Length: 549
Image (cartoon, rainbow, N blue to C red; front, side):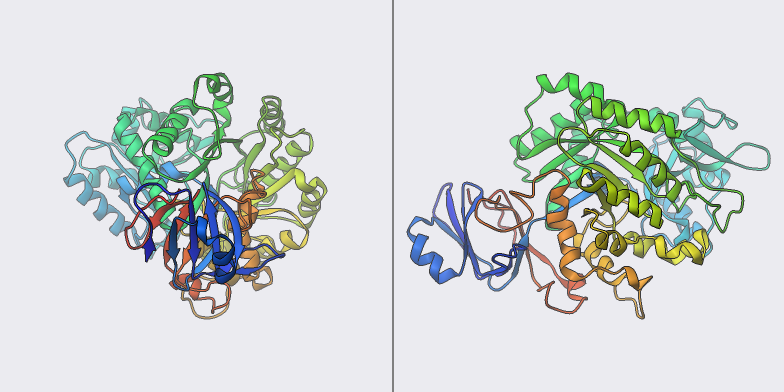
């Protein structure tokens, strides 16, 4: 029970903790003291009460719950998490027929002509791995334009009305950084890859500012409910620019009191706008930071748009496709560095990773932050050695849940010879390469405990039998560090975050189970009881959202 006097308090004490600091000098604790949002003392309750109890204004007794440094998600899309909550959610769909039925039901609730938007479908989970045709989508949507985003956000289902609204017709040319899948007549069959979707997305009527703010709030609140105290997020494309994104976050954090720390990556197309507008915007602070320049070198394995050095096993003659030529990617990385930004480059296939490393090797860094390789899902020994050679100039931003979502079908894509290089997190860790952990939500569930479970088991929750390529599993503490200390290395905040010690920010995640000592399934069964950010109880399982600062 929380005891506190009336009004704001500057000093409070957490007691009754089964605490893990992730600080080797003082691994365990059962109490700590917070003053003005910063941890000032860590240790044993009786000792702290004797020394400092007279200064304490309030007490939070967590009654034996496990207390960890606050979780950090190093790669997700907060706006897309909120957007998916407001759209047709197709995450659990098991067949083409079920998808079409959900579209019909959604269409019946929309006015004529309104766009039908949805996300989360994955044909690899269908009873038969096939997606609906454009004509089937036309019928289900009942004359409404439709866009359904695949779970990877690199493929989309569209119908005839959406193509017409975008002024494309049925036989538009492929852009250099995307493609339209076509039927035997050469017409768009309904499936669109990567940036070929942009003209269609631009045709969707803009959201109101109130809708945008609500979308972002829903994503931020989802993070807090899942014990996440800070996010490294990529939202500028969603809101059409840096200034609009920054202003929304600043309002939600500093005016509306949504206590989540945000490190906002900047899409490479908005770097100039970011630099030009920052002087007129609220200044960055410990709550809202400018992050790296986000770039893409390829797509995803699910839609076979990840760029491989050898053919896809299940699509001979096809290796995926790069988003840029090697020369253009290098030029874009160099331009980001010259503007003062680190680069965060999405690279899933091994050919894309090869190209990305070449670009980073020729760069000179930016803003004092490490460059990031985002995903690095397929690696080779020679690429690992090149990452090693870059040392602390880079950090690899991994998504452990990919082992759950991709491995049931990735064997078909890549064949057995390449499997040991897929999601090879242990190989990277043992090579001394810096790793941080993210969910890529809404591509994967936002819950960090699911990512940690995937890292230590490499199998779906509650599945029987061994996981996938168990030689690559991580131990429990290493996996937890991905979402705490590791994620804080990515924005050079490890001195004040990702660890519990005097001088660190009071960012804490409080769980119902001991996820370090209990069996692996404790990671699945644990509930978030409290999320504390900057000394504020930002989420409480009992609904008591009280400020302690």
